[in-house]
Length: 302
Image (cartoon, rainbow, N blue to C red; front, side):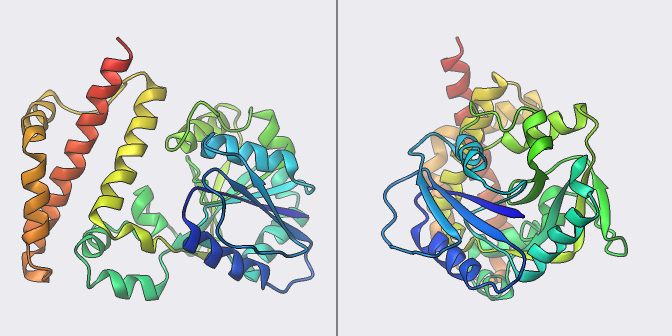
């Protein structure tokens, strides 16, 4: 009934933990797990009757998801990130929607949030407190939407591949993921395709998946992920951006002093009393990454 499709790229400990949780799920609902490895050889050997692991080296997340879909034996695809913990309840919820013919003309995201153990850890980290302050640890906060938990299915205008279920026929009818988008921005484009095809997108609120992004609490990892995301977006939007001229001038002036802002972040005490300065410093560093990627994209498209 259900094909769980999971792309991964060099997050060995993270994906191993995710897979260990999935393969132990006990349910009578038929499902398979398709892992598409886009990076280096996995350093662990995990075998299970439901698990298939394929190589798709360095072709990008979009290509990995499409490849996984091409190998699926079931008609409902459940795309998840390699750090997304799903549950028996997740599978049962999708199965119930399937029995109601929901996926004939609609698609759905399952709600998610960071696990409590990770949130507890984040409160003791500079980046962690920054993400909690920005409400980045929940789907509601990251998507900047208000979830009405009184309703099981909430209509939304965009989807996210971290916990996304869609029928095979609908997925193929809209042209799948754009494989030119290697890392970030593919969800925006797929959402656009769904909207243009008048295919409703819903958020399923009763079930919560857990997004285990515990490797994003290091400043270098945080900024590198920002960088790769911005580069991917700019490369595929041909340098279309949404920022004011004043903001561009300010952060362009900051670029030569990037190392000083990074040094400031490093020396600031890891105490909540300094968070207002720490958060501003992180914001500046992220904006510098943004404009450096934007200028590089401008140069590449000349």
